[in-house]
Amino acid sequence: MVAFLGSYFGAVLADSPRAWKSPWLPVAGNDGTLLRDGQSVYSAVAADGTRGLKITLQLPDVGAKSSPDKVIWMGRFGDGDREYNHGLGIPYIALSCVQLSPSLLSDFATVIRNWVVSEMSEAEVLRAAMSRGIADWN
Image (cartoon, rainbow, N blue to C red; front, side, top):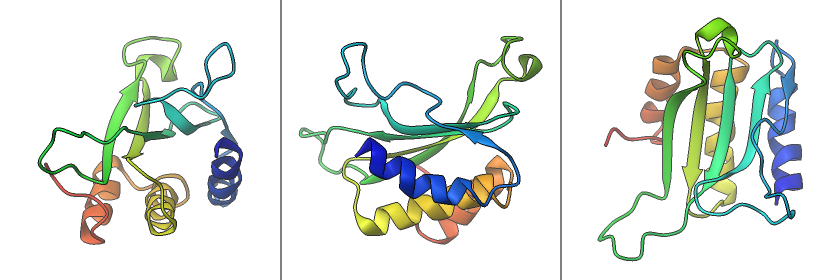
C-alpha cells in the first residue's frame, strides 16, 4: 500500500512548483512492520520545509454510534523549534480515513493538489474541501 500511495500522490506532487521529499514521517517501525492506528501511511514535505502533508489510517471506532469515514485537519510540526522553518514550524495538512477507496483517493488528491500545486492557504484548502463535501466542521 505504501508504494502505491507513493506513486499515486507522487504524481500530484510532480505538478507542484516546489520540490518535495517523501516519506517525511516514518511509515514503518524499526522492525519494518507497518505502523498502525493513526500513523502515517504516506507523508511528504517541501524541500524548503515550508509545507507538509500526511495521510493516516484509523481503526474503526467500534463503540461509536457514528464515525466519520474521513477527517481533514491542519497542523504545525515543530512549532517553536528553530530547526523547522526558522521556528515557525512546518504547516501541514493531515488526511485520515478508516478505509481508502478510489473515490476517497480522488478526494484526497484534490485536497493535496489545492495545498501543494495551487498553494492555497490553510483556510482556503479547508473551505474548498468543505464546498466539495470532502470535509465538515465538527
